[in-house]
Image 1 (tube, rainbow, N blue to C red):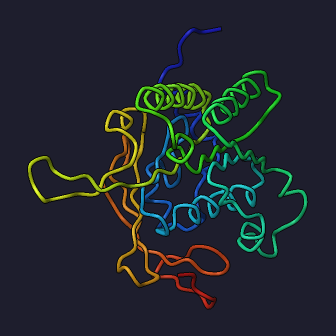
Image 2 (spheres, rainbow, N blue to C red):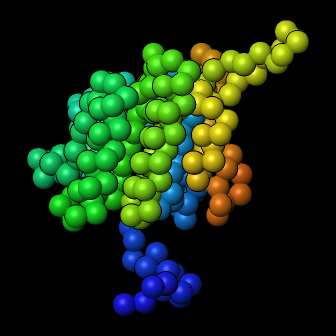
Length: 255
């Protein structure tokens, strides 16, 4: 068995892998990979509370299940709702698809880390087979730690996620935002909640925001990717999932 793969072998392997995304071309182009999430990498979705991060995660989970692939959702915030997933699956929903989604609700950092390690062990031993891992969210999973504990926790989680990405699955994380005041001024700016050095662990970074504070229109922007230029797409959240603004369907919009 060869120790290394050449570029031709990598290209052939990538051609056989399923594209994981929302199922909406305008949005999938922005996700940072080849018209979907980047496999073998870590994609981070950053935004304010209520911007639509969890809805994007559920849309990608539903499309992954609809495509007959398995996924794992680590839900630190307790925001995952099975009935919302069923809404998005619509007429395609059945017990077979729902059984293809595994769910874990870790209540603290140690439980989150244990879940990541168990998933890695399962994948490496072939006892577990998933195409997508969603962690919603990393920042919430490390709340309440002191400075030293926080840095250790983030570093440990980052290492485990990198190990998991080396197995070729797609990983999607969510991250909150914070306001940071520029030292010596009254000026502030919005940044991702996790430390600046955390960005080194992330392969692709997406930013999601409301186009206007009171409106239902959202914008998803790609700000970091090794294989895509910066780009953005606007969308709304409807009762049956996301819809690109150019393809608005009849249905109740979520605010």
